[in-house]
Image (tube, rainbow, N blue to C red; front, side, top):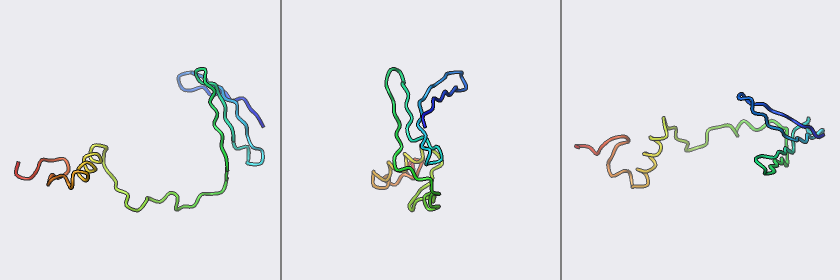
Length: 97
């Protein structure tokens, strides 16, 4: 089943798509086509499964580390690469300075 879909964003800009929906997959859009700035863009979905995903797919991976911000993450990772940061605590100067 092929459809023409027009979407208007909050600024009033419209985008037109041609969408192919699979009737045997509850009308899931298996192909989406549009012309974007003179270039044809096609999104094609293959091996579509409408089964419920396993809950384990949403679990936090082993070894995950939470950082409060990007700066802390970058600083921590750089210190690891420098062999422990040469005694510098995260966000600070070496002890005694």
